Length: 242
Ligand SMILES: Cc1ncc(COP(=O)(O)O)c(C=O)c1O
Image (cartoon, rainbow, N blue to C red; front, side):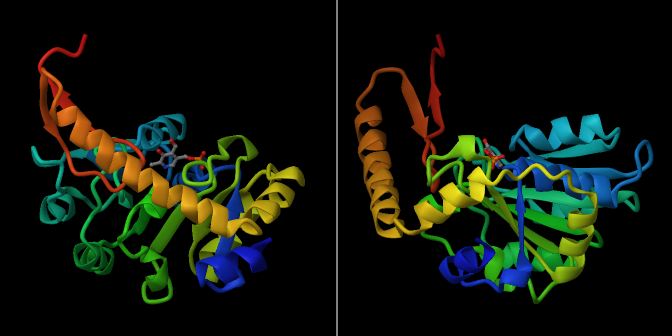
C-alpha cells in the first residue's frame, strides 16, 4: 500500500505513515511531542476544529492566533505568539473553513523558523492547484505533511490518512499508535489508487462546479462576499444566516 501511495504521491515509502484517518496523526503529534498540563500547540483561528479537540483530550493548551479579516495568516504574529512551551504548530492549507491556501514560501520560512513540529494539514490539497509541501519533508526535520482519502477520494469511512515525514518521526508514531488501520482500508485504498484517472476527473469537475457555484451565488440577494477557495467548499458571507 505504501509503495503504491509512494508512486502516486512521489514520496519515498519510508516517509509514509498511515493512520486511522488524518485525525490520528494529528493526535499522535500532540501525544508524542507535548507534556500534558505543561506544553502547548498553536494554530490560526478559525481552522480545523480537531486541533482543539485533540489538544483538550491530551490536556495541552491550544493557542489560537486570529487570521486577518480576509482569512490570510500573519506568520510573524504566529511566531511572535509562540512561547518556549509551544511544541507544535498546526497550519491547514487549504484552510478549513475558509478554503484559501497559505503561500508556499511563507510556509517554508515558518517551518525553518519555528522551533517545534510544524504540521501542514493538506486534507483538501487535491482540489487546489498549489504544489504540496510534501516535496520538502526531507529539507526540514520538523515538517509533517498530512493528507487523507476522506475528501477528494470521497472515502472518509475507510479511515485512511497519510502523514509524510522523516523516518525518525515515523518510528515514534509507529511505537505509540494503536493498531487501528484495518485490513479493509489498505485493500480499498489500493483499488482506488488503481482508478486514479477517474478520481482525477472527479477533482477537476469539483473545481469547475466550485467556480459555477461561486458565480451563481453572486446573483443571490443577501450574499455579501464569496471568499476565494482552493477546497471543495466555499465560505460565503451573507446578511442573514437564517
Ligand atoms: C482540515 C482537515 N484535516 C483533517 C481532517 C480529518 O480527516 P480524516 O480523519 O477523515 O482523514 C478533516 C476532516 O474534516 C479536515 O477538514
